[in-house]
Structures are given as C-alpha cells and as structure tokens.
Length: 408
Image 1 (spheres, rainbow, N blue to C red):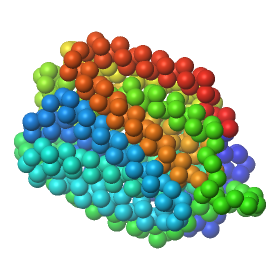
Image 2 (cartoon, one colour):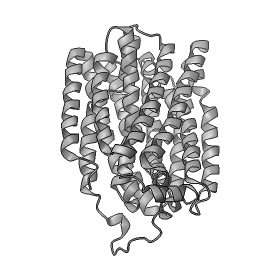
Image 3 (tube, rainbow, N blue to C red):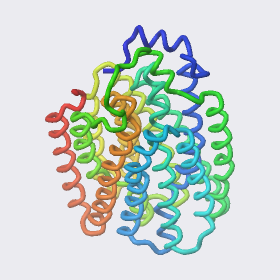
Image 4 (cartoon, rainbow, N blue to C red):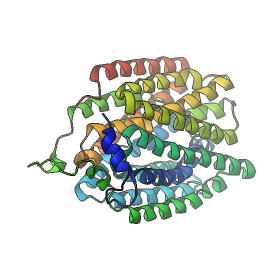
C-alpha cells in the first residue's frame, strides 16, 4: 500500500510536466484549505451558541449541525461522478469554494433561526460541490509524496486555518459582543482563498501528470473508466466508516453543553474549537505517518477516540469537558486525513472522484444520524448517550477487524 519508494523519489524530483513539484503543490493546496478553513471553521466554531441565541434547542442544534455535515457529504454522490465524467475538477473546486466563502458573512447578518439554519447548510453544500474534485486533484500529487504523508500535511495546513479562524472570531466576539462583526471579518480570508486557488489552477492545470509520471504506460482497457465498478474492498471500508461516524457527536452539541451548563462563556467556545483543531492537526500527522508504514490498522484509533468523547465532553466538570472537545478534534483530524488517504489507495484514478463522492455520502448519512442521535439523547439522558456511543464504536472496531479495508 502507498507509493513505491523509488518511483516516489523520482516523481518528487520533477514535476512530471504538471508545472510544479508535487510537494509544492500539496503545500500550496494546503494553504488554499488553510484560508478556506479560516472562513468556515471560524463560523462553525460558534454555530451552536449562534443558533441558541436565535432560539434553537439542543435537539435543533444537533439536527441542524448533523444535517449540515450531511449536506457537505451526501451531494457528493452527484458531484463526484460529475467530476469524473466531465474532467472539470478545477471548475468544480472553485465553484464550491465560491459558495462557501459567500455564505459565511451572510450568516452574521440574518436575524431569524430559519435563515441561519439555511445558511449553515448552504455553506456545507459548497464543500460537497468542491471536495471530490479537490481530493482527486490532491490524490494525484500524493501518489508521489506518499498518500498518508501528503494528505496529512494538507490536513495539518487545513487545521492551521481551523485554529486561526476560531481565534479571530473569538477575539472579535469578545471585543464587540456581536456575531455579525465576528462573522463579517471572515470575508477577507474568503477573497484570499479564491485568489490563491485561481493562481494555483493556472500554474498546475493538470495535476494528473504527477501520477501518470509514475505509471507512464497505462493499462489497456475496453471498459469506459467511469463504468468500472468500485472495488469490493472500498464498500467494506465504507461500511466501517459509516459505523464509526454514526457514533460520533458534533461540536455543535458539545458547545451547546458548554454554554448551557455555564462551563464556558460563549466567547471562549471558539478558542476551545481552535484547540480541538490543533489536536486534529497533530493526530492527522501522526496517523498519516503511521499509515504509510503499517497501513489501515492505524484506523483503530478512530473508534477509540470517538468513544472517549461523550464521557469527557458531556461532563459537568470544566476540565473533563475541555478534554472531551480536544479528543473530538483529534478524532476529526483522523477522519479528515487518513480516512481519505485510504480511499485513494483502494480506487483507481479514473473512478476516484466517484469513490470520494460515494464515500462522503455514506459518511454524511452516518454523520446526520450521529448528530441527531447525540442531540436527542443529550436532551434525555447523558448516561444513555455515553453508553450508546461506546456500544456503537465497539461495533465499529469489530467491523474494522472483520473487513480489513486495506485488502483489494
């Protein structure tokens, strides 16, 4: 699994005609994600308190944040195959980023719960449009750098933005006391995101050359690439991922608990979110490095981390609740990096965007179920929430052992 070392070194020494060396492409693409995360993670860090200020209950916050994650994932069933069939990876990536960076500042000026809920979900739809195309573009470069390391470095840069954005929002919120200015300031990195993305597209119009340089003689086939079935190993892996994500709470519910139980003031919630994103960056680098060495067994960490979140995060003690949020961030880091790297190794390039779309749809449905489940159980009984999540993650661990997702 992963890149052949000799071929990888050769590809790293040249751009393969793509216009930029693969590691530079990974870093610049990571910088695009850094700026975008500045925008939307800054907004997500206060989604729970913002919705609560407009009259939302814990169940509404759980459903909306879960639905938002589903909206970021399920529509990829369409955007993934569309990218494979049209080859317009850059156009879809840019279009998705435009939708996201336009939605966030508007979230700060609406005054009704309904409109805010719509914008939360709209911002996530932008992610759904761009992500299969973006992940496919990135996967070509990581064929040369190493899947785990390439996705991990990209995710670590992504998480830098997820740290800076919430901290910026926290500072503006503390200074002004209003959600409008705190979200409005995020328009600046939004414009920078689009400018850098367009520059990168002009420098590297065809990142597939990174991967084709490793395999210059394509295998002949009589089947149209987009008609090829997805491998069985991919479906088994998607089943494991669905199980572990069904038992994964959202930060919206965690932050709702922190504010409603008076464990933290609303202005401190984005600061904690920034800490969770930093934990995610470290976890992604660690598991990405291990994945290139030991393969999918490193994914055992995800159900273990997810199971630890509720007993800590929904505690009545500040220290335990903060620890739970940091563990949540570490689990998210594994989800956003190493889980995606495995997909690139399981599925050939002509079907990769489709696979990312299907995979994300599975994750989205499970995330919606997880958000609704944890929000509803929180409103009824925290002990019941803890027991349920631990049981679901134990089942996911058994499924991971049974399906062995690294095997084709």
